[in-house]
Image 1 (cartoon, rainbow, N blue to C red):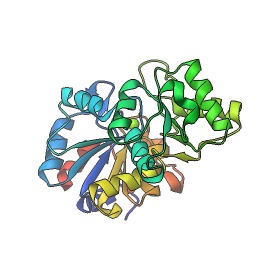
Image 2: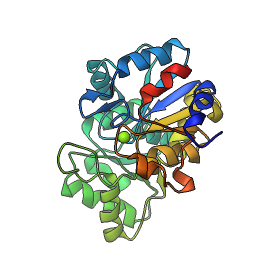
Image 3: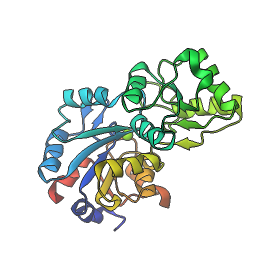
Image 4: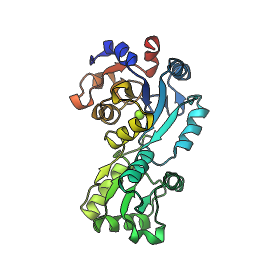
Length: 274
Ligand SMILES: [Mg+2]
């Protein structure tokens, strides 16, 4: 596949599923990027599937669906897939029936339980077979001390995603990558597995769930080191959009690991090629 803007037509032609990053790709803050609702409708009408793919494991898929619907960006047949869902799928596959101490919001804990992951109650944490770290925006010292104890005692240690900060209005707050470094300092360990972008667990879970070969999937996003590297690591096509945090200058000077199949000002540029 050509690694330049001319490759956009070929990239779109070979795509059956668009994996879409959200912030910086389909909306910025609470504002859709240009005529995004029309663009997504055109993608669906062409027979291609829209799958939203996010590393943020502080919210459930249902919470994202509500936000996307409110912005007019969620349509029939669309799917939201979070790093939390990929982690639950990984646990079901690799730790079937084993009990997990999960550091997460209550809504995300309920999502893991509904996905068939047996969770330890807070007071039973010491009996957990694995320690799992999600983006818990209700994190407390007590939870940190418990997961640290399990990590020090050598339990398998899994994190949903590696982002250091979470995009937000004003100063970006600490995300799971920052919690990982805190726990590295106290326990001496890094996670055995990180599931979200740019790694492969989430990619494998997605292609299995969607039933499509990796070569028919295109990941579109605004962050080269997470979105584009994720696509490249998983054998997907990749589309870097300049509607978020990457400038044209930065896009022209990316290392091979983060170089996209094509670059576009925004996702709206795919419409003529559908
Ligand atoms: Mg983004």
